[in-house]
Image (cartoon, rainbow, N blue to C red; front, side, top):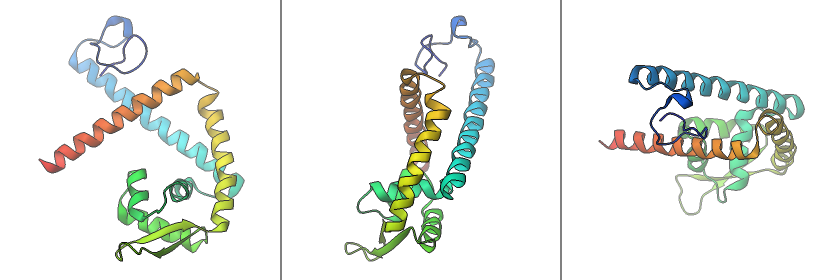
Length: 177
């Protein structure tokens, strides 16, 4: 869907006032441009935040994200992390292995399901996550909060959430069809 005059993605038809043309071919080209901007932005944002975390607390963003989930979700299983981060269970398990080997989390037997384990942060993991969270939040403020208004961030967040839910629904429909 093209953006509405309010600057958010909506159900409105394309109009000349939005800068989006009315032909299907042009809309597809503009959607491809939007796709490219989203992907490049995600990559640049990821690299910037990852660089800050590595420089300040020697923690890659690939470890920070699952550690956030482990701290927030109680009890936490590999499945929970994979679901929250939209990554595979196998990849998540290997990632948790690395975080555990570094001493930042530990696995314990799951009394409710012998096939899975429960994961928790170690005291060292909790301390590191606290330091990393401060750097993470500061970097997001620098890269996002200082660039656009709170209202624009809220609209962008809502739009991305809507698009993610729609894509998950489409993927679910395709796999069950």
